[in-house]
Image (cartoon, rainbow, N blue to C red; front, side, top):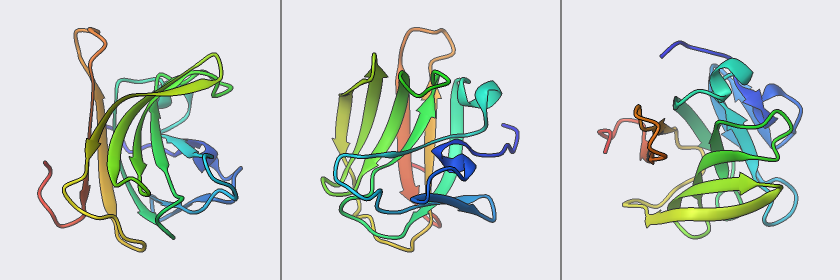
Length: 144
């Protein structure tokens, strides 16, 4: 995968998502049930099929870092992988017609902590079957 700039909320337009040394920092978005969304790149890559990103969290509990695939330019539709820190789950989400839904959820095999570097890989099936896979792990741990 090419190394690309971050897009959507991670483009510097939102104070709760910042980039330093190619790593995203997700913070509290200011109210509950608001997500900070990021694409690995702008339209060219954010609408691609695969992403591998690294990020940290300034806090856990209300932070829900989300990495998007196949996003509409105005963020009204996308698929996402979300680290839901208050529920300690990794979720596959869908936004369609400005409504969010969780398509799948799995418990994390670890507890997320602030100021820890994490990796998230999101892939869609090469055969376009609609399959989306996501993994998240702490830096230094093997990829699950």
